[in-house]
Length: 345
Image 1 (spheres, rainbow, N blue to C red):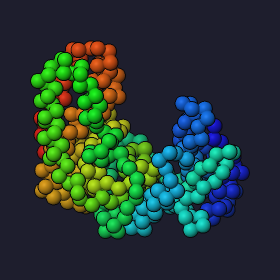
Image 2: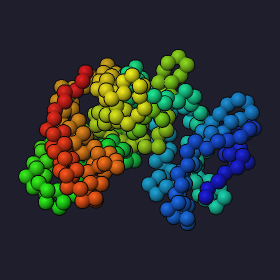
Image 3: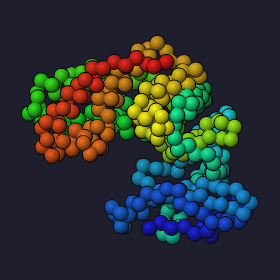
Image 4: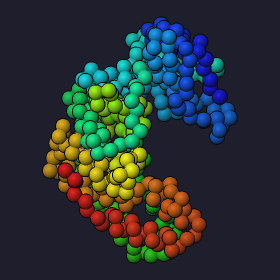
């Protein structure tokens, strides 16, 4: 397993121009690649280093199949561009004219970056935070577009490709079982999917620009004066800005932690707040508003947790041979793909 010491961290910080002595460090995140493969040399470790001068820094160690030095430098350059345009984000540090550098530590080759530690991490998203987050995302989109900035990396929320919110492919993979239950219903779902997808892909030839790629409560923080900031550009890459805006909004409205008083109704409240905040900074066009009902239907119908991830998902029902549950999911998916929700501005 990849490990580091105070001495390793102190040496790295000096390379990045930080010379105060280190008191101690704590792990913030670790991916245990060796659980599946004891011989793996893949690494993702994020630590917080506390120094004698009272400052704290985040040091990231990475060696993953889809990560290159160039990508990490581009991601860090984008974070620095945003900071220079008054977007609240941690200061990134450089060594030898680059934001990232290869190191060999305890038999592992790792790419290392250093940034200031951001205090005030948000744990719960309410209506005010959602609106501020939408505004923040719009500001970031405006900066990326104006600078024509790009990061050559895949993103999580591109509805035209495999993404982390929904999956028609996983639904389609159950074709044989579902056809045996209700051929007419299955074929109706597939036809409607094709119709909706055609509506959604209308922007596929629009320019792509760099996006942070993972606005979430664990990647947001609030300053003492109430400003919302963002850190962790691990999923930063190029996306069509409209798709990023809507799918990030749905993500924030469905997959975060919320105040008890809005439990069960948070989606409508936060989706509206997020999109209104975005719209004030970067107004949606009529064409974008017209496409929203179809994109929302697409995400809802093939929502990944309902299709695959949850214990009571469609795929679990098929695996168990539960015809009744699978048929109920087909009916629900059909209802969702037909539903048209206007953009709540």
